[in-house]
Image 1 (spheres, rainbow, N blue to C red):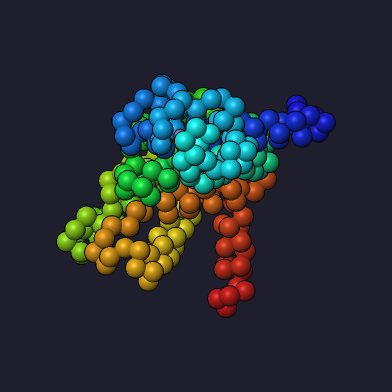
Image 2 (image 1 turned 120 degrees about the horizontal axis):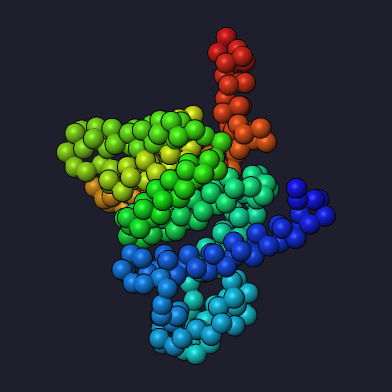
Length: 273
Ligand SMILES: [Zn+2]
């Protein structure tokens, strides 16, 4: 068992791993939608094409030292790079604290990285590349095959049907009502993958928040005139945010804080009777 003395080191290690993965995710987010290799070549400045030296590629720190400008051509570096690194680092640390050093933690953290990459790509390109769906299913098969999740294979399968199936039905209904594609098939595939990790109960929670977030986002974007009335609003980021909220609200016993709160307050008579 991991003793309390080395736990702070484990946390520091998780944070650093998260920051480094965030740096890699920046490459993934930039290259996957453009069908470029994520392995090589090494990262270049998008302004002057100069290869970025390792000491200018340290997560967050390099961005601050370089004052957000390329060392060579002084082209501005987007705040998004350190932002993705920061989000990844913090999520890794938080998930370690919630799930503890376990196989479940590794599975959840991999899904979290996948969700972060999908969020940024979907906002930019309105697509969820199949590479992520394949990665998700592969991770799910490994996780279920080796029993790394507190979830039976059947529960995973019902979760898959719940999450993916609901999105599919909503999309079909929307297409029927509005006479145009209401939900991308990428969202449905993502729902199938996520449901297999969550099971039915957590899938319903994630779905619920997906629609809340999606509704809020639509209202904000339409009111601020960021999108025209007939324009597409990506639903992927609402799904990813809702799923992250769901996996971040796990209780020590394996339950979920929001679900516990719901059943305690809604069904013991406090609000309804
Ligand atoms: Zn440059």
